[in-house]
Image (cartoon, rainbow, N blue to C red):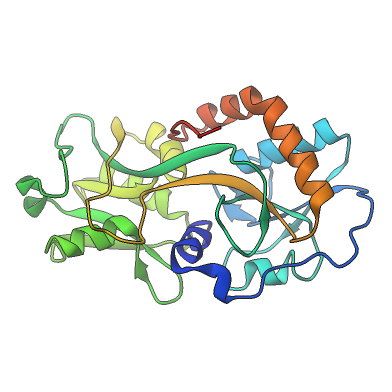
Length: 270
């Protein structure tokens, strides 16, 4: 599910599933991070993702060694990692995610519209008549290939025929595949979760423009923006507090990492 899966669960109401709970929290010997080994620009086994960089900042700040439990972010990710105590923290979860106990948000982002810079076709809203003439890429989430909130918005406006779906799971991150398709002219635009595409848009062989697009009115339960926090096991108050303190003190350093990876961000409410 590659991080979008957590967003999908948050929208669907993750409270229906059991949360990962701490039995008897032990003193930390390391910052043990649960992460996908191949999910750039978020995380990668070689440490090059922005969540890897933020985890490194946190470990240094807490004066702990940094270790990883690598597992593809698919169905059962929280249960198989935090739930079995193989690791202690997920660096990026929706702030309202109910399967974990979460820190304060450290950034807020949204789905974005991506287009070739030379085209200048960004719509003013989902009611823009030009959308009917465009081939638009959207992400498909999970094993059932559910539409992302922008895909649902296009469907609600009768724009199913001109949508190209890109499964989140694949040999390359969906943001990378969509940026490449856009640069190659295979699609006219893409609606993508911003943190997954800004990095690749910046590196595309043709200039691409990324901008936020507001969710249409009436799209209940499918927000376009999410605040992102760190998630620990329920009951692990000491680790959550330590990470909260890190985020509060080191927010400027976190912001610099996010900017380096071209993560579109909005103001996080205090």
